[in-house]
Length: 210
Image 1 (spheres, rainbow, N blue to C red):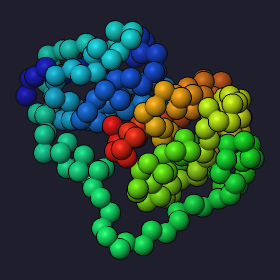
Image 2: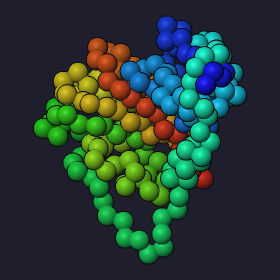
Image 3: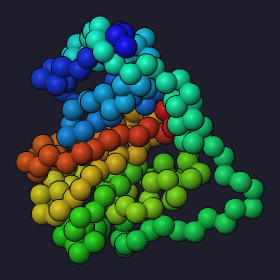
């Protein structure tokens, strides 16, 4: 069917991720430091992402696209926010140690072919299903740019450049200070010279995914 849908100009995109955070349907994700429309059927054509874009990289266009699938969006949101059943025993999904960005080695066997999780310290406390949804099957690095008072960019860039990393998932809180960890990953990707798929997931202070 022909309908109104967003169009992303990759040349104008500065990789800030504001549009992905503004997209309530989860249609936009960050890949290789650029915004991409990952699910056309998740885009409702209302354009909440347009005013969030500081560079004007997002516009509307009329073209052939799958119909907006409101039911699929609803189910995806329910899956993200569904509470854990009572009396469920949670087991740790950590697969390596240490996990602090300051302490982790630059090269290690577990980085080979790894899906990397880079998370702000507070996220694991704010989001109840953190181990099962984020740590499981990933190599985990954590830090707090405010309390650590350091720039992680160089360390992360060396990790990305020196290892075969398949993907990066950044999990941060909605609070402004958490932007430091997202920006460090973005700069590290640029410095590494590699094109690695990455996404940013933001957690609210009440423990929901935005």
